[in-house]
Image (cartoon, rainbow, N blue to C red; front, side, top):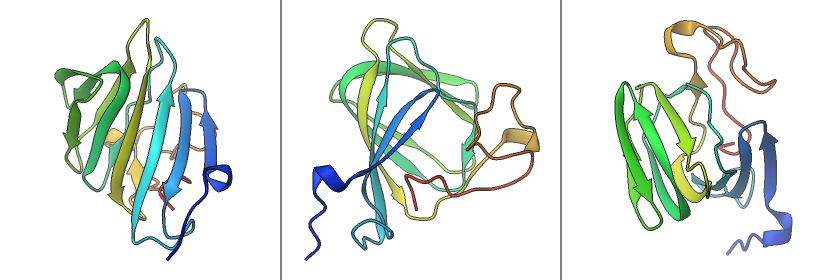
Length: 138
């Protein structure tokens, strides 16, 4: 029975927040991926798409999710189901930010809507039509 110690969790820092891998095939041998997202107050994730469904549960704070032009807000204790292959962008609460636990299929791939790289994309973001497995999902 694998036990993944908090001290062994893999942390990936991006300009938008910190993703902490809690379980994945490369961390604990899980067949699913689970990670924590900590986004600071006023932060915004990049506009992107995933090729699989994700389930986000907010542990603290709040956010607004723009899913293909449809906006919804969520607060601590709320769960958001993000379907596959729809553009999404997540905006942290301006005063509190948020912390969430996320789960989705291991090996899920992120890509850019329309195959166009955003001008402010960070180094680990997919480039143009590339599809990548982010480190927190591997």
